[in-house]
Length: 72
Image (cartoon, rainbow, N blue to C red):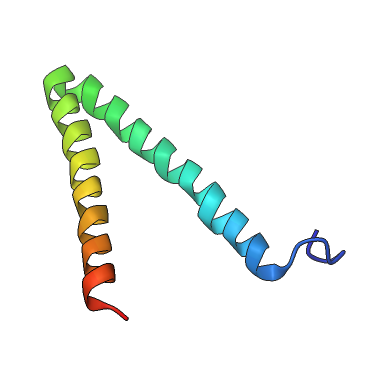
C-alpha cells in the first residue's frame, strides 16, 4: 500500500503501531490476568484487573486535566 501510494506514511504508521499495537497490549494484559488467576486465585486476579483498569483510567483523566489546563 505504501509503495503504490495508496496510503500515506503517517497513516500507515498509525495503523501498524497505534491500532495493531493495541491488540498486543490487550493480549499481554489478558495473558497476565490468566496467569495470575491460575497462580494466585480469583481474588488476587480480580484485584489485579480492577487496579490495572482503575489506575489506567485515573492516569487518562489526569493527563486530560494537565493537557487542558497547563499546556497551550
